Image 1 (cartoon, rainbow, N blue to C red):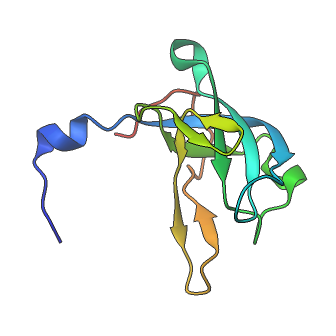
Image 2 (cartoon, rainbow, N blue to C red):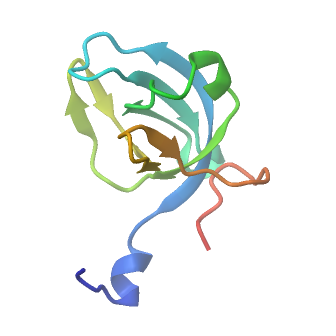
Length: 112
């Protein structure tokens, strides 16, 4: 594993956001949702694509807080531009489990 210094870590903007919109993403190569996430007043709404259909239903994601990286450049994913990276962990079966706070925190809060 490569090590990084503290300055490298400080560059990554890991912020909490609330999922406010979930749509199917049939154009994606692998099953995915299109998400709209509220990262608070400073950052605003960001769009992302997430391959989390294995264990999350659309209705379960609405209102869910997640941890996302908000300072990557936008990335074209099929017909949409992803504006943030939703974070999670792979299970042994390959499904992604979202990284999220276990208590509600303000949208836009930075990982401490």
